[in-house]
Image (cartoon, rainbow, N blue to C red; front, side, top):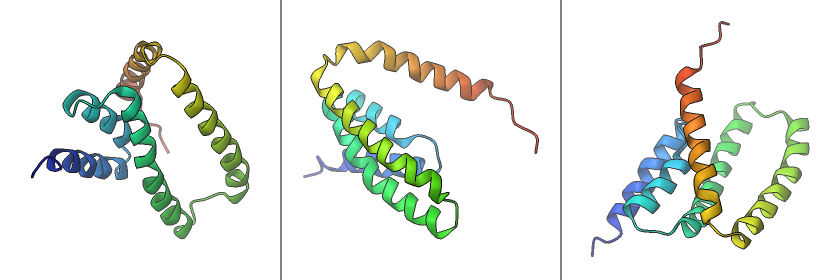
Length: 122
């Protein structure tokens, strides 16, 4: 009866963290693989589907508040779409074990960079 509760709470919590700019998608991957027993490839696919509504809502509010540069957007959307399709295809055609160490190194680098980042003076 309550098998849906933990996944729903993970999705809700990572959604809130995403809204705060903390990287909820990465946290969602960790929750799914470590706590919910989802294999990494399925978790990455779910994470991509999770990102779409989050990105859509963010895009709506950024447009509403005038934070979008239309010329940059015109160039970024087609290229970003092609890259997303290409990497999604690549991720499904390569053995997932090849991604584990590079992804771990990337997370380690990102975490250390955030910890060591100095605040810029205005």
